[in-house]
Amino acid sequence: MITRQFGIPVTSPGAILRREKDLGTPLGKKTADVLQSGGLVSDKIIIELIEDWLRLHGGHGFVFDGFPRTLRQAESITSILARLRTALDLAIWLEVSEQTVRDRIAGRLQCGECGFTTSSSSAQFSERAVCPYCDGPLVRRNDDDLSVLQTRLQEFRTKTEPLASFYEKMSILHRIDGNRDREAVFSDISRLIENKR
Ligand SMILES: [Zn+2]
Image (cartoon, rainbow, N blue to C red):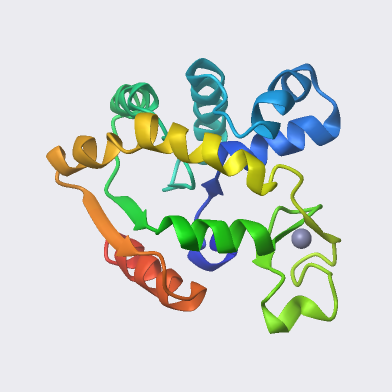
């Protein structure tokens, strides 16, 4: 969704790794167990993936979705971008309650082909579980089990939460209420990005 509407390249480490897993690469196999249990893949692997991606696609603006998730990742990307003589313009912090996370994980569907995500409660797609972009099959992500939620929330509190003050100090942090419907959240994000172009 984001990729198409912003018109600039977007990447998410999760999407890259799921693709590696589907392709059966050594990296995909290595990281599948960690993802399955709700843990975070090592900083070293994530940073290498992102650096490779940036070299290929990041020449004229880019958006990271779900990256960085740890302080070490944030520090690494800061120095990688400095070497490329650029920097982040914006860090968007989606504030979402634990209940919202629970509800969304329980109903999330993802395209097996292109990674587009939607929810099973979204009327538009409930009758026909097919991706609106590529006609791929919409399936429940298999790391969506609610039982891994506690691990994921714990990882978030200890490793990701500190990033808010990291980017606040750099004066690029913008907080958005992510508990609202998808369209409202998306239009806020779009406005922030448009204002930086
Ligand atoms: Zn698709």
